[in-house]
Image 1 (cartoon, one colour):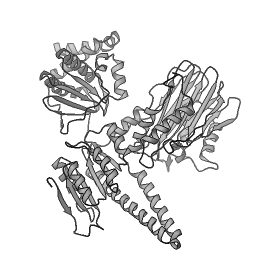
Image 2 (cartoon, rainbow, N blue to C red; image 1 turned 180 degrees about the vertical axis):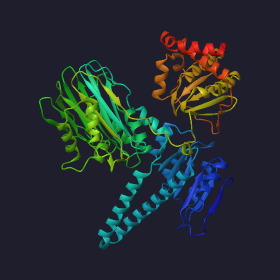
Image 3 (tube, rainbow, N blue to C red; image 1 turned 90 degrees about the vertical axis):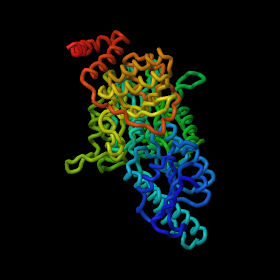
Image 4 (cartoon, rainbow, N blue to C red; image 1 turned 90 degrees about the horizontal axis):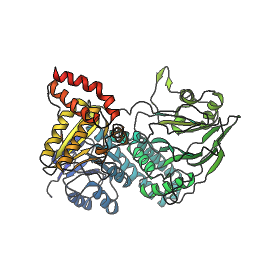
Amino acid sequence: MSGKRLLSARHTDRDTTPAVLVVDDNEAVRKLLVHALRGERELEIEAVGSAREARECLSQRSFAVVVTDISMQEEDGISLMQWAKESFPGPIWIVLTGHGTLDSAVSALQLGAFDFIAKPLNMATFRNSVRNALDQHRLRGERDRLHEELEESNERLREHVAQLEDACRLLGQQAETIQADLRRAALIQRALLPRTVPSTPGLSIHALYRPSEIVGGDLYDVVRLDPRRLVLMIADAAGHGLSAAMLAVLFRNRLPLVDTHSGEACAPSDALQAVNRSLSKATTAPGLFVTAAYCLLDTEEGKLSVASAGHPPLIVKRKAGGIERIFHTGPALGLYPDAFFGQQETVFGAGDRLVLHTDGLYDRLRAEPGTPSERVVRVLEESDEDGEPFLDRLVRQTDLSRDGVEEALLDDVTVLTVEAVPGPSALDNGASVPVPAASTMGVDEGAELLAGGDAQRTTVSIRGHAKWAQSAAFHEACVEALEMSGAVTLDLTLCEHLDSTFLGTIHELVERADRADVELRLQGVMPPVEELFREVGMKRVMEHVVPVMLPLPSQMSPLLSGDRDSRAQTLRILKAHEDLAALSERNRREFDPLLEALRKEVAG
């Protein structure tokens, strides 16, 4: 069997020695992964170079863990997982990718993948993931053994049930602590949050979002459907890692706000019913669910309609005095496909205040009498502040420090308030999502620019914050490809921001491609970057944004900025901003001072 080798730390019985199967069509990567696993424990490692060889191995023996790359020449890792799930469902699966897409991540999670790790690999993270997977496989075997013993002997029933509960608790704790702090997951989660409040005459809306140190699944939204109706939504996907972020994406994308047939606003209960059916079909892996509260506010009638799926109580503080709590009207989403969700109606009059929050607020509440929800009510009753001061007071009521030293949040904290009084609105989404260290993600300053392809198509991937100093190398690589009449794909899946020089450079490349009648496509454009395109009026660039994503080349190399003289850099910046200034009068006024300075520098 070509490309396969068997390594064993000790030659022991295969029935007692766990085995790991590594599947990657890149020989260097296979060797690196095998080398990383040597000496971990009594462990057999089998490495193969294709999905076909992996099928043969899985047919011949049992493996505790399978580590597979998603993108391979003959057959991808997702297809291999689908086949193995039906034929050999025993192993725990860890999925690797060098250019993972949202669809790949969701597919892997739906098939029950244990972990999803991005390349370039951090070996410590990889070894830890394999250790945890082996532990989970061992615990799963222990659980199955206990089930068999329970069936064989009723006399030991109580002891075995206790052991089984301990094993299940350990599995649950392990699932909560296994997290992949991936930049892409953080971007997806952050992109779900609104950046501005829609026009809401007569209302003051404030939100506060404080992420924990790891990627999470909290989200909220405020959407105006028409002049009189406003949707307020808050949700919390189970877990803190990649699965939570992906589940939040599924929930938000599949939540209907408007009935497609009538064009009318969806009733809150109908909206949750629809998204629950969709999530129940899409999420087959255990432990994946979402709690959510969905509110439809009729501002003309002052009527608030609420449906809640296993979410903490919503709180209404009346101007005339008194507190009303609105409890959940159905279970969490994604657990029961035929679940029913009720709906509550209440008056939302002038001066009333509505508070929605996730249960991350409960984790640090000071130890006082009453349930966590009652403690939040107590803060609301005792507070005369509104808007940002109230949110600040509420969060400060949580015990965020000990001995004067601030501690990290155990979970994301999200609070959304709506007050029926005229006034300013503000959304406080906190500091930027923490960027993983360079040793983990292979990114240091600015953006990471990778390029690869063949004579027919060149793909350039922009990851992170793209800055002017990198625009010349980017421009040269794309121009070279276009002059060879090859198609160009700009992948922005992991791009967080483009500065004005980069925006102008992309616009220039699009115009060049159109003139040469050469295909140039932009894929994976996230909402923050799309908003940048719209802000500067890059309509022509928007026409090149495509919904269907092409896979990235298996081999991509960094685009190095190199040493360029200051005049060349200045000319690049000048040309980019001249292109932007020509798009609109607003751009011209904004960039005129910069253009004047740049032209003087070039002339001098």
